[in-house]
Length: 51
Image (cartoon, rainbow, N blue to C red):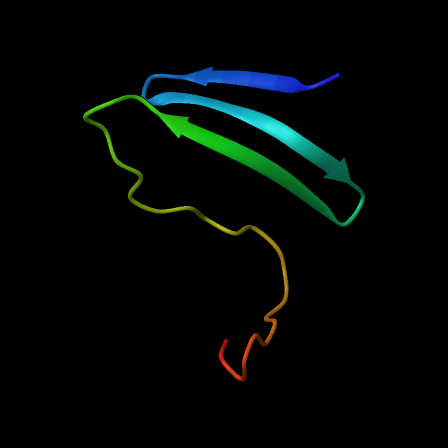
C-alpha cells in the first residue's frame, strides 16, 4: 500500500520504507518551493569523488 501524506505546500508519497531508509516523492503546489530538508540520521556517501 502506498502511503500518501498531505501538507500545506503539497503532498508526498512513500515509495519505499525499509529498515535502513525511507524514499519519498514530494510534489509541491504551484507557486511554492522547497527550501530545505533535515536529515536526522545517516552517513556520508561518495559519488564521483564528491560528498
